Image (tube, rainbow, N blue to C red):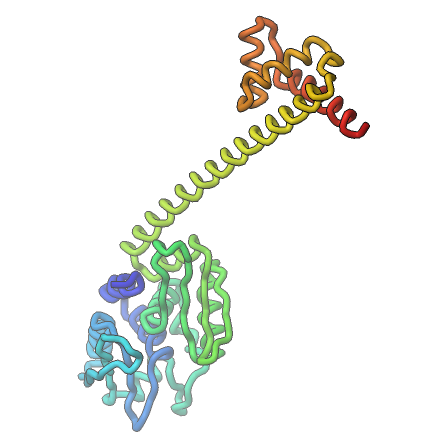
Length: 309
């Protein structure tokens, strides 16, 4: 079962007030339904969503709705549930902000549908039940989207999302408009907004795990970069030492610099800090990393001079 299905199954059993139910039905029907021959048709593959919509409509408007089960034409193995509303259609369509008084489609729902914060959450929940999907966070590709067919509705839903600072954006698609969120934290906030508590916990656990893995990888990469830096520096120093030896130029160095040369050859893989500590312990003469670096600078400068000559 997909992560999106788990979210929809969870929010399909949320108990809400009458105004929230109307807002949720509005979000679902406006983005799912169509009217033909004085009948309102709604479709879903999810039996829990079907049961929720049917229960809410029958309870709220005291009617019976018809259900048809059809073979899905989009290559899905799931059946397609078709909810058909005929009784009190005009009342329902006006009540949930689908049609106006003249039976014309409303570009956006009336203000009373989303008049309060909880009603906005309910409307977004209805839209998600109808047209939403969220990638499983295990994929490491965080993505939430709502597919909206009408431009005014798409802009309206985007504004509702951004009331909660979700940074939702719109892309124009061939068959409508995709509202999407890419940021993991914002997607988690959206799941909280629509009331899927279990889905939020799952999302956050996976996100925390990914963050730890990424942090560990960054540390490992940093450590490897430091190791590479040490190895490259030591290799360069040994290369310059060889130039001095081949050109009988070691005797041109002072005693302390000769000492650094000897210890580099003795400990070719040691970092500058490690080498300074070794020299300090073995000779009894303390030398700092900076002081040792100064000696190698002399070796490098002499080797460079020899190469140029």
